[in-house]
Image (cartoon, rainbow, N blue to C red; front, top):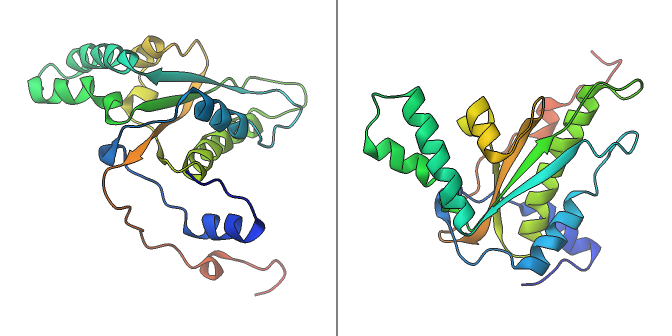
Length: 196
């Protein structure tokens, strides 16, 4: 796996970066050293007041199946009409990639730093995880799912009290060619202040 090492390769990387799909990931995932590097890069984000208003929960190995059993139990409670096929999907939610990293926002009231800024910082952490994993040769996808909003599923993952899940970042090796999607033309989104 080649790391980015000059400015032109960084620009090319950013210009062509695509998210992977959790449905098209397999082994290998990052090894412990690579995972450490990905996390080191992830925390290099704007953080007004140096509050570190986020943390990580890592799911790998058998932990992915164990949390899946919790998800299936809660899904069955919420949707008793759904059959075994739906429950199996919930059991396998985190099995789609070798590594799943939950980014948890710990944003809280602060005398000087708005909670909104703290939440934005945790969102940038999610994106930095995706960038770092991709730069190391993996594919990554930042998403949420019902488990990021359901209080029981969140508690099962280890999310506490007022914390929120900013994202679930799936990391693995692509099992299919990444397709690009249409991108908006930035000029159509730009307003120059003071001009009609």
